[in-house]
Length: 242
Image (cartoon, rainbow, N blue to C red; front, side):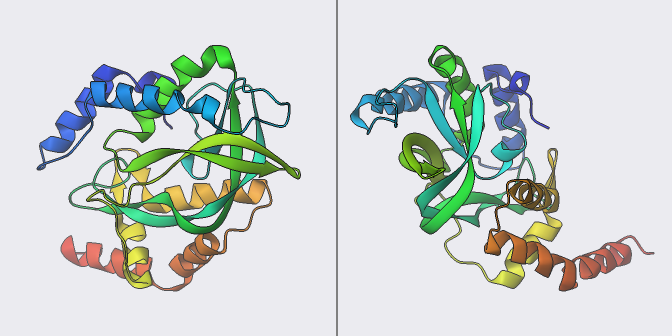
């Protein structure tokens, strides 16, 4: 589980240094990350106001690990729907829940369809501190882009923000077969755990809010039924001479 204490400039430098031991690794500088955050938040007043008619605080839409491990402070949360984007395992991963030896895939919001998740409300007095943490979490390499969006909850529309995939980033995977996707999820593992655990946690927390994401639920079902994991276990056994 990630904690807010994990998101400090010193810790970010350690993560980047460790990643670069295994080869080239592009990461934003602290200055680039801070400039991106301030520039994005500076656009807030240009966007439609919430249903109360005022722009106080900040709503953040979560669709993956934010559902169970936001690591930032918030005042309230509610189920919400985002239009125009959908969940997809489309980011190659060699750290966190992947490694150079066991590369995985990370979930992101890609264009098309809609997505149900959760909106977290950060009160105005905490926006500075909590978005600083959020940017260190989501904008390490620039594989995501912050985006203002309109969210729907209980029939009401309100303005929030989320992070969508950066399709120009070298880690973006435009196309991958279902079989390879399943293999990467089954094999991917790093210091934060496995891609399989990430998928299971996401599905479990969607179940808690009565959300069926056919893409994720079917991936988990196929992972359990396809024999991919049994094949992986056999390969590991053979490699270990057992």
